Amino acid sequence: MRRFLAILFTVVTLFAIKECVYIFTSTDPDIVVKKTQLSIVAISIIIPLMLFTLWLWSGKRKQTL
Image (cartoon, rainbow, N blue to C red; front, side):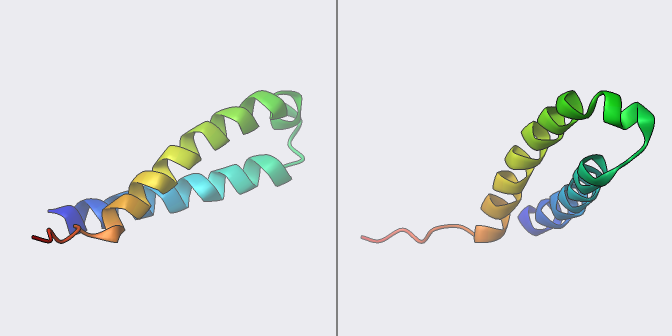
């Protein structure tokens, strides 16, 4: 189950990164007007997604006696 969630969140994270790059590089007038707001929202979504995805892929820690 953990591997399935890791794959799912990896796909979602990659899509979010792609959209963030689009926001930062876009010359579309609608995006340029709200660029600061959209970039803050994009980064605040991407950072937790990346951390959660890395946590899912890291695996379980082994218990030592």
